[in-house]
Image (cartoon, rainbow, N blue to C red):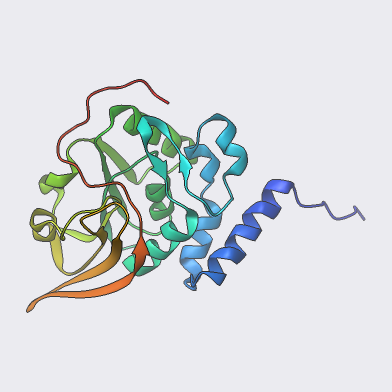
Amino acid sequence: MRPPVAPSPQDEARWALIFALQQEGVRDRAVLDAMEATPRGLFLDGIFRARAYENIPLPISCGQTISQPSVVALMTQALQVDRRCKVLEIGAGSGYQAGVLSHLARRVYTVERHRPLARQARAALAEMGADNVTVITGDGTSGLPEQAPFDRIIVTAAAEDPPAILVDQLREGGIMILPVGQSDTVQHLIKVVKTADGLEYSELGDVRFVPLLEGVAEDIADG
């Protein structure tokens, strides 16, 4: 009989992260499984890959950051995604949130205004095998009208209010999760449910995201 194989340091770090997510209030087993199955290191550069399973935000290209796993998990849990859902994400970054959603949704469309990040996201998601995710370089403030309506919309940049153009692309009964706030220091994560009678809002906690900007960013060097 072979002796049991000791877990690798990476496995231990991943398990520790999942435990930390549970402590932060992530209870949905499907979300926890999706977080465990998504290799965060694929979406990070160079030296930061060694810190992939720390529950902290980390730098990525184009002066952006990859959100801390607990924020990704809590936003995903609040989105209530299942295999019937078509999801729109505004702000792909390097693709990590879309990678998590790929385990839960039928189809994910994610829009990124920085071309280098969109290329990085496509490559990482392809390496991960997330063939139900489409990465689009474009202006996220316009949404993706040609694919609307969406069952779920998640926005990973802060707006002053839920953008009406995105609300219009949300199916009745659909859910949108996004940070709102006029400054980069005071923002609130909110859940919007679109009903036949209007929009229902609930607040999920304080967060800090980059602002939601119009247009496609000019190409800059990676780093």
